[in-house]
Structure formats: structure tokens, C-alpha cells
Length: 92
Image (cartoon, rainbow, N blue to C red):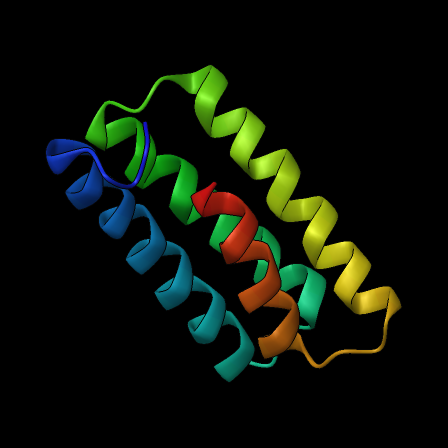
């Protein structure tokens, strides 16, 4: 599902919003960066399933996001920057 698709745009926004809220909630509750990313991933996958996004697409986006997140961590970025990098990959 590409971001430009009218119906898909709303679904992608819902997924991103769920992931963002879960990530920040986890950080606010004292979670580390990796734990917060996992919470965001679970929320994104649930929102994607509810939106009808195909599981194989969700899996591919999740893998790309995780790679970007891990790379940003290795580069010494803060959790917020890591999450932003991962979200850019999840949108592709």
C-alpha cells in the first residue's frame, strides 16, 4: 500500500499514530529504546491488521523499520531519532 493511495493513506496514518503513541508511552513509563520500539511494533502490527493491510506488507515494513532503528542506535542517536529513522523506513 503506497502512501499516495487515498484509502491507504488513512490506514498508514492510523498505523503510524498507533506506533508513535505506544513508543512514547513506553518511554514515558521508563522503557529503554529497544523495549519502546517493541511496544511500537506491536501497536503498529495491531493497527495494520485492523486496517486490512496484508500481513506480508506489514512484515516487510517492520523488518525495514527494525533495521533502521538498530542502525540509528549503533550510530549513537537518541531513542527519538532512532524511532524517526525507523518510521521513515516503515512508510516506504
